[in-house]
Image 1 (tube, rainbow, N blue to C red):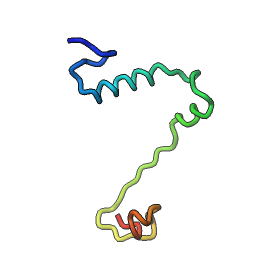
Image 2: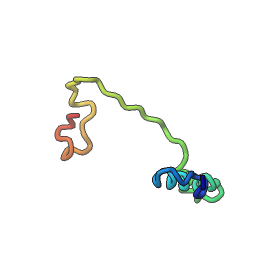
Image 3: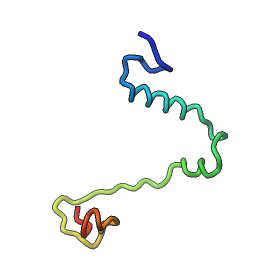
Length: 74
């Protein structure tokens, strides 16, 4: 079997594209990034959202897109 820049030729094109993208991203060092890019790529706070099934709460977390989800109802 042949290989196209590391990914097997038999892999779907989306997998080959993903392989190329990850390979390219892995070749970039912190020194290659601007200060803004480095700050953007830092690990930030992790937020975990949850919900209560059948909750009737309407005040706590209303929609930020009221035209998409009127009244914030999920």
